[in-house]
Image 1 (cartoon, rainbow, N blue to C red):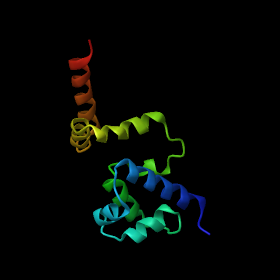
Image 2: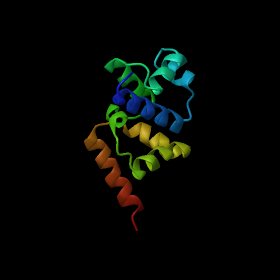
Image 3: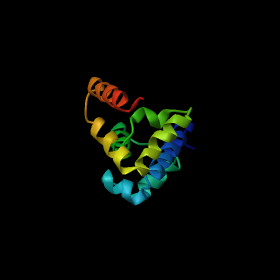
Length: 116
């Protein structure tokens, strides 16, 4: 029997994969593995290496720490709904490639532009 942490992480992988509207096979292809392996991970039946965990998080556009977050807030669900709006999703993907200070500067510019 696997530990509760493998089940927790597996459930989180499934949650974020579904948020991204990805199949197990699509996620598997993104990290160069099999859909069967992803299924075992999601069910908590399989341990994984940290490198695999990092690849999965990257493919799902999340931080590794999100896979260990027991308290999932309404705000994080709203954040991932942004993928339904292509413009917002493109902004997120653009900003994630930059430093924290550049992200904060971009936020301040947008806030200044759109705050009445």
